Image (cartoon, rainbow, N blue to C red; front, side, top):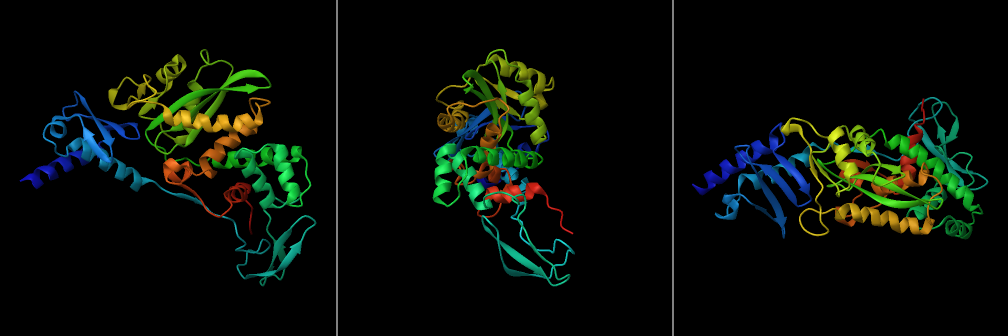
Length: 377
């Protein structure tokens, strides 16, 4: 009899999870709100020490696994199943660039002035070629350039990178390193901006102050709660008078959806923007705005503060930025999303968690090669 009741609870939980109108809303990583069966109330489902607990009578007083807990567990499983992976692979020589033939073989090494390249021979047309996508004419190899970018976004200064490259036999100015960064970040940002990440239904927003040529400004940022994916950003002159509506609008455009739960601090700018971009008169489609967060407890913005801390550590090395439209801000967002592994995601990047897989040992090089979109015959 007990098994039959549990099966009924699980079936009802599945109905909640599959409902077109949102019945299960995520507030935090371990906190969900599930609407009651009557639709007149709601229950809180919280994870403590690996176990889900609900505020409904079944779970609280009868100590049984209720339909609300089943709904949360099934909803999480369904999200994992529907995620579609976008795989970005390194570009290898698989066809002749002249005739498109697949009958190619390696044919010695091409010795350039600064570095070496693999050369290929096409047995179809007899021509030789090499592949160096978007690195042709550069004074350093792809490995050196991408290593410089990695060092910069992990915290090294431009001059320290210059010293490191000199030890590798590459004599280059720190200005050239900055030009590499600006060039390739612009290329990568345009390419990756066309790929929609599979983010969750709970988003967080916060702001952090930054100095631009000695002037104080604020960086507003939107992050996905579940995957830590940095969705969007914008620079504002003021914290209190800034219109954050564009941040919410861009986030919707980039993800193709709007969040069901929006977590911020008490800054009025967020609630004004929420009213214009996320609010609907229908309760079923209305985004919940949580703005009474605390430093500790069930509802907090610690994840967003952690991301702000990452950027603050990097900013100390830069000693401020020169201009608000700098590629450095976009570059750190890209590094955070696609390159940097996160302990909270079990060593995955936020992009991995969103179903965007970057393959190859050198992810910088993989993205740059694909962003260049070579035309092969």
